[in-house]
Length: 188
Image (cartoon, rainbow, N blue to C red; front, side, top):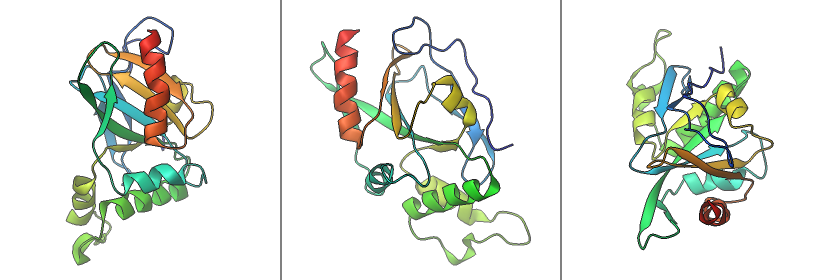
């Protein structure tokens, strides 16, 4: 229920040939099923596998509160390429899903008074919070399995134009992750 499988068209992990997942499937912070398109895309995607109660992950959650445009230098290219962050968590209980929702709502900013659930159904507030996010967020146990996430925080960079995984790293910030992944990209 809390994690959905990853829709794949034959996964390419670092150092292995093949395409990346077409979409990550899972739950949004409000428990609704979603599929996030990853590749092919005009931009690159940095999937940040974060824990909800992880001290090292706090730096990433704090960075997301003030999102700028993430960019990376591509070896052999003179310009920078934009990078879309995607947050992936692994909610294994309703408490985890509630903590995920609170994290995302805190990042989205203050909610209006009508944002609370009314009569057991969602009001416009949840959708408004999701619409204010500068990045997609998903709970997907399948993504963690398919990308063989060894520990969190763990970041995987997907080249949208080549539909390939460039690599995965453990880092303390988005800029540190992109710098480490730049060396992996130049080795390809």
